[in-house]
Length: 440
Ligand code: SAJ
Image (tube, rainbow, N blue to C red):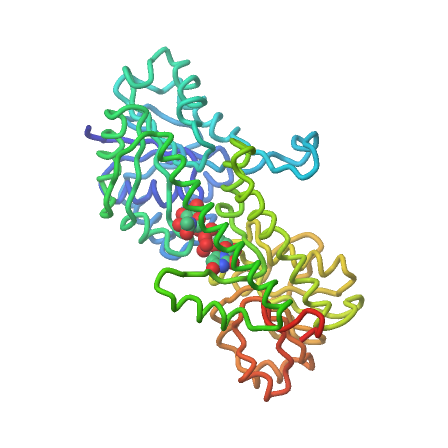
């Protein structure tokens, strides 16, 4: 199938890079977003999200004349849905019993599909990219799109293709990663293949729509469960008075073992969310997945407990929280466990000041922001390192000692080597090291 024009619905972290990449590969693209502010920002050649290289790419796409930004779809050869699938608001989940799980909010997906209906024509392709519970394409998209009077499969193609790009490396991975494309029938998978072959250099593998949905959820759930076990190992190491980082390094010398890194929890809009889609779809089959989520979600509380063991009663203590992003070297604060740690420290009575080098002027309610490292460290009693940003890794004991009297450090990501810092007078309490009871 040949594509002259496509319509991309949702111009976020996935939709915008994808739309721009299609445009710079010679396809006419209408990029659609329901948020008027996003539309205006992009029409002015600015971007509303941070991703290395994205601004240049969007500007090139706009300049080529192939990318047009709009607030409603138009007729096209293919429609691609790349909108968020967050959780339902608390109020809607309130009726759930305790020990339950958050529910997926598919309203962005269904609204986008409804918006396509008036423009859908015989021979078109529709692709869903948003991470969705199993069977969303078959059971939810088909009936909506068939309101057009056309039949899925017979009259138009319908496919699911998960995005698998790593924030921070989206532009490269979009092109180089292998791509799975699942059709509601083989012709739909083939049409999807033809579309992505425009720019994807990795292998493009065809399968069914539901398999493709599961593949995405399985990838992120696999990672979540593996991080959970690393976090559980850290808790065990603290109880048994060993260094989990050393133990992991040694275990990983086994040819078939690769334990991930413990940390303050799992954040971002993917790994901390997607496993719940499986739990929601089949609670009776997912005790392990559910428990792994609980382990990772309770990790911020564990970090606070650890801080209390290291520094005593936290009430009134000035704590400089270093890093708020959900992972190193990105400015993305969504679902960040670091923010949860900061909130819990405040709840414990600490006077918290946060410093996020990628978003120093964040506006998180109730969480004071320092505009510089100096401002964060000045007057602090305790330093809590919550994100392994390169700038934090590169700090030296002398630099930090010159900025603060604080000598107690809680390092949740193992970036300040005690062998280097302790001779300079710092007491480094690393997550996953030493006994909780001895408070080391
Ligand atoms: N984390 C740890 N320990 C580790 C690795 C990660 O605590 O050893 C934490 C991070 O600090 C972060 C969270 O896990 O809070 C997730 O970070 P990540 O780098 O593992 O993943 P994401 O969320 O940035 O991107 C993931 C990727 N999926 C997989 O690696 C299986 C990416 O390929 C997906 O495209 C993306 O989710 C997505 O959009 O679904």
